[in-house]
Amino acid sequence: MKSKVLLIALATTVFAIGAKAQNTTFGVRAGINFQNLTGEDGDGHKYDNKLKTGVNIGLNAEIPVAEDFYVQPGLLFTTKGAKDKTYRKVNTRLSYLEIPINFLFKPELGDGKLLLGFGPYIGIAVGGSYTDAGGNKYDFKFKHKVTASELPGGPYIRRMDLGANFLAGYELSNKLSFQLNAQLGLSNIATQVDGQKRDKIKNTGFGVSVGYRFK
Image (cartoon, rainbow, N blue to C red; front, side, top):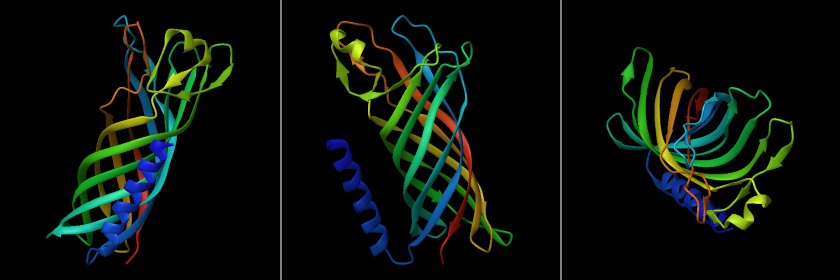
């Protein structure tokens, strides 16, 4: 509940600032993700996963701060996860609401504009599941920390994710744009278990998207 309240408060604040800023524009964006879960277990063995295809869809604002420079806050629904390389049925699915806040360089290039940006994001998991080698599917429970006795009630994962965005693309003169996105998860989303060495799990990935900016 606290995470949902935080998300709503951040989103409201971001778009309230954008709505008041002079010459702010708004846009929509949708695309495809190619995501993975990287890291290692408590014994130091690295995870050997392969990319999982997902989607992203949302809206953003562009607030001018200097010539050709903008702050671009947004609100996205995005799906992430990974597939196991060895066992085809093993599949991790995660769904997030994300607030990216990118710093955007947008100079004129030809008839359109070049898009180059980077910035942090905050992600709140709103759903997810894990499918084991036998094809059994279990919904994730979102907890920051559990005791060893709670493990049979899992699987568990942390709700909050933090990371960095990178983007490059091109906006046509008709306000249609094409963009390549990359994400690097900086926070460990593995639930901590009392009395055990902690796993390390981070979201990583890239994607392509198409957007339209309203005049």
